[in-house]
Structure formats: C-alpha cells, structure tokens
Length: 556
Image (tube, rainbow, N blue to C red; front, side, top):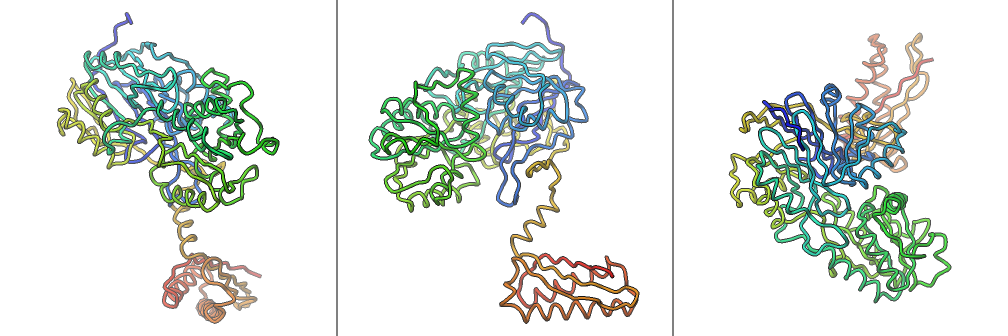
C-alpha cells in the first residue's frame, strides 16, 4: 500500500464482550478519534437467564460516537462473532467488512431482521485497506468454518493484531491453510499489542487434526448396521462436508434436520464452500422409503448447537424422526462451557433409547480452537510487545497469560481485561485508560432489551418458590370488604393439601384490610405493601419458603 498513514498519538483498546465469558465477542480499537470494531457476536444465555434467547453487547458507547466509526470487521461466520450484527446496524450506520462466506451468513441474519441496505464490503485475506490512521491487513487462519481470518491494524506505534478463533493443523481437511508466512512477517514488522483466542488455554498439547476426524467418521459410518445420526454445530461446514463425503462413499442418503442447519448449508452450497455429492441428500419426509442401513440423519439444535434436537429424538418427541434400538449416534461436537449438565443428560437419554453413542471413544470431533502449544506458536510468531488474552472465561484468560509468560512476555506487559476496561497506548507504552459503559442486552422473543435485572429476578423467584396471589374486592364508600380475600397459589403449595395454611392466610389478609379501613388507610399502594409484608413473614415462618406475593385489590 503506497499511501502513508498518519501518526497516532493515542490508541485505546477495550472489550464490550468476549472477556470473562464465552461468546458475545466485540472488541474496539480507537486510533485518536477513529474507531474500529472487531466482531459483533452473541452469547447464548446462562442458566439463571430464564427464558432469554440470546445475549448481545450493550453498544451505547458506539451509538453515541457512531460518526467516528470507520469500520466493523467480522472475522468469521460463527454467531459468537457476528450474530449481533443486525442489532448493531439497527442502532448505527457503519461499513461492514468480511470474507465471502462470513458476509453471506451475515446477510441472512440481516435479511431475517428486515435490514436490506447494509453497507457490506467483501474482502479477500490478501486485501489491504487504507484509513487515515491505519493500514488494515488480514491473514488466513484455520478454524471450524471456512473463510476465517485474523486482522492486523498497522499504526505508527506498531500493529494491533486480533487473531479471532484459530488453530494450527498441519494436515488440514480440504483447502484450508493457515498463513504462517504472513503471521511471521507481521511479527517481524513489530506488533504493539496482540489480542488472542483463549478458549483452550487450559488444554495441553495440540487440538488435533480434522483429517483424522474425517477418517474416523467415515469408519463409523462404514461399520454401522442401522441408521446413523450425526449431531454437529450448524456452522461447522467442514464437519458437514465430511459426513456428506462419507455418505457418498458408503452409499447412504443424508436427511438434514434443523432449520438453522438447512439455512447454513444452502448458503455454503450457493457460495461454493460446501459440495453436495450427486443425489446424496433426501427430504426428511422420505425417510420411510429407505432401509435403515441406507440412512444418515444430520441434525443440529435451534441455535445451531448440536444437543437440543438429539434430546427430543431420544425422548421420542421429535416430529420428524426419533432414536430407536440399533441406531448409531455420532456426537461430532464438544460441549460448550456451562452446558455440561444438559450434554450429559442427552447422552444418557440416547443410551436409554437403545442407541450406540460415539462421542469419546472415537475421535469424531476436534476443537476449532488452538490448545497450549498452538497458542504459544501464535505468541512466538507475533512477538507482541503487549498481550491481551480475549475470548474466554477469566480462568482461560489467566491460563493464556501464563503461557505468554512462558514464552517471554512479562506479567507487566499482559493485561487481563474485564468488559469496559481500557488500555491506552502513547508512544508505544501502555497504561490503564479508565472504563467505558458496557453491559448485556437480553433478547427474549421479539423483545430486545425490554427484559432487565428486575424481570430476571422475578423469574428466578417464580422458579424457586412460586407465586401466591391475594385477591380482594373493597367497597370504598362503606369501608367494607365486598368479596374475598381469596388466595391463589401457583408453584408454592398444592392448594388441596394446604387448605388450612391458605385459610389462615386469607384470615390474615382480611384482618389487615379491616385495620387499614378503620384507620382510613385507603391508598392501594399502602394496603398492598402491608399485605405483602405480613404474608411474607407468615408464610416463611410456616414453610421456610419465600414465594412472590401479588396482592390484587379491586373496588366496587
């Protein structure tokens, strides 16, 4: 690139998501007044987020400064890195850059949300982009989805490098190749700060080769006597391709189950990233036309994860196909942190249904994230002056920091950031730079951000001790109770077996109201507060439970 970049006086780096957690990746680099956003991902809800579908970063900081945003870069097509792009572009206007497959998947998300005018710009891994304060280049990485890249922002103080998700596979499946030469070249030119994937920083060794997985999956399919179910992440196009080729090799037909899986496969085929062998796929409606030994069922869950559909199939509640005695189930996926219990229950249910489950005894899946030796190789290639472990829970970031120390990056030059914490660089020297606003935006159905901590608290209370409703009708003029009180319990006690308790509660409510009426306390809020306080104390003394108490007062 011939144009010379302008000097940068101050660089600020912070995360709006993706640190201290798995998913929701969004990192921000500020070069003086220019803002660059790296990824815009979602996170799937934790157990205590009852009823929530997805979690996205709070981008208030970016909305207030959108005129300064130069670009949003998407590194690859996983939802944890680009699933929030529709929400972001509804709130602000900025050009989006990504590789061909990444933009194809992003465009599908935008279309679902009714966004048709997004400024999407396709880049090639060898592309160079010019901005006032930076030259931006890319380097190919190997991950569990094609077209994955790392990003380097070359500034007058040195390069800011974001690896995104990566691994080093010396015998990769297909045409994927990590651009080791370019990574080494970036390192030789001088890396001011490296932001690198920490997901597998606790795991020793190497992540394993997808070429081995292809052989193992084909071998299992070749020796299976009945139907074969394969569960994988919808975005793991490499794994899907391996299953399709194995099906073709052994004369089986593949039925695809799952809306998300269909969508991803259609996009990958259209863009040339997935090859369908001739007549290998069939409709799920045609399963009965084939013998068991001719079938493979490829499935995934509602969010593209592999487990939820298998759970329904094992419990015989799936509308299209269910597990039966003699089936072979290949779980070609690793369990996501936080979902271990659901994974274990699903495996147990599959065995109870009579399936032969392949998930640990054969190498039918390898991680798309590098383990310790691969992370150290990236550190040695980049040779950063400063290091920020990202994309991982805190223990993973901490483990990554220990690896950095082992290859010569001191603790003083490694920053374990929390969301919103800023690292500032001046003249190539780093220092803490304060904090910016951050947070979670919860998506529940069509609602975006309308469920907050108070609603979640109420949902947790309801899930733990249930609800008790006290209904009473008052004659305000006569200052008497016209009807009730009536106590209704849901999730607290079984009403038929707790009649005495509920009758005592009704008598207590009646006494409270009568006292209030006699003392001319006629404000609904005061009446409700008195009822709530007295019932809460009474019920805890009797049951040691704290249900949500909802007084309802009507007037005639």
